[in-house]
Image (cartoon, rainbow, N blue to C red; front, top):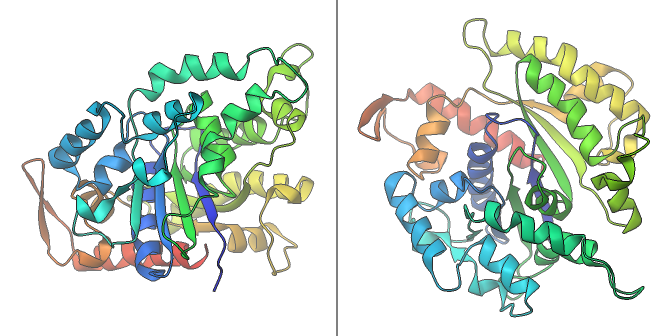
Length: 351
């Protein structure tokens, strides 16, 4: 059994690709399949959608989330970050929520460092502290700030139990997103079958790993330059997740169209910079080989996945054909539920 902690960050610099929904489902299934490990979801998105889902979904989840944010010392990612900066950090358990205590539908080994809308408010403070003038050679303010979440992923939650972290993010490349990205050992990249997602892949590589052409003025201020200056690691690309494909032409057709461009771009990056991709045992000599190793097609989440996440229900417990979401009756066929769960299972088996 792997006894080490590991962490996965889910990010793409494009909104609407299903990051929070995917994070919810992966964390739930991973926890079910790995009862010997603790699972911690770190919500680095100010919208905190994944937190709401884990806390029971809907208005109930939102109410619990607001209570966590309103505490004198918020039991949220903002509380953890601010207390760490002012050197009043308590044990991680002080900030983490054992999700089952709020949502008894989920496994008992899932914990949550809740999202918080105040991430937007503290972002300028984080930036100012990161860019502070060092007072000595040993003073590294940029590094210290950017490692706050990374350091948390080295912690244990329960004695003798390894931890797997899943880090949900915001599409912006703000400083709190940078903290989340640095914290990941591996990167999961959700994309839609559209041109904007294909374009976003170029942006992702430029922002995290560096553009081929250096800007004569701005390059010294980039995230990539600062990462190199501070000798920090970046996550390796683990999987490209094709999500929300067009229904008219079918998932297979849309995925093929997507792979012609998006996977081509990823494959080109792989050929030039294999070090940014996870290790693997298979031989990759073509784009088809690359697609087999590094991409997974997700079934459309318009019904089964979205209903489950909005109600805070893992796919394994979806056993009805009709569910109520915000007063609306939503029909979810058993075949769709099964296919959705099968796809998430495949992702988790490859983590």
